[in-house]
Length: 184
Image 1 (cartoon, one colour):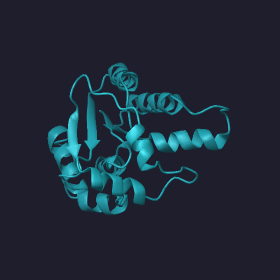
Image 2 (cartoon, rainbow, N blue to C red):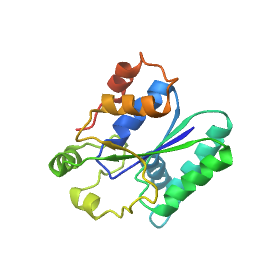
Image 3 (cartoon, helix red, strand yellow):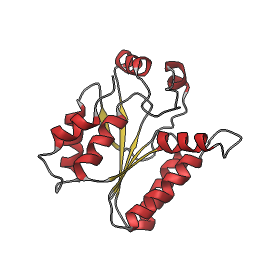
Image 4 (cartoon, rainbow, N blue to C red):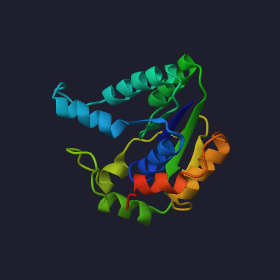
């Protein structure tokens, strides 16, 4: 199974995706980490562009081929990136679960963005202005939606597990969330 978390920065994707990955012992691919590693390597003269997504697509396909569940944490803002995840799932012969994480409370979303501290060395967290200016196309097919202004990370993970992962262990959820931490 390929589970792709999408949404603007500061909505809670990383908190939820990493907790779910711990809960079901899935491979966790975070685009921010991949893109920062590319920058740190100094291999590119220009902006990272789609390179991080292409690398994540290849890593996901490899791990799905080994029989692992894969969770991807990314903005996934455009049709092309979403379509690429569909192709990865089809090629691997696994189901694709698209999860869009939003925060309908703009004040809460802004506070999260403006007060968050980076957890990836070298990566500068986005500003509120850059989040609001970010390209984010509407979905052609509605994904499973989580509004973090309405549900806690614990509730979000439980909702996802109930909807898509009936075999997921139940007893590790609080521990997974404690290890994942939470973003302001």
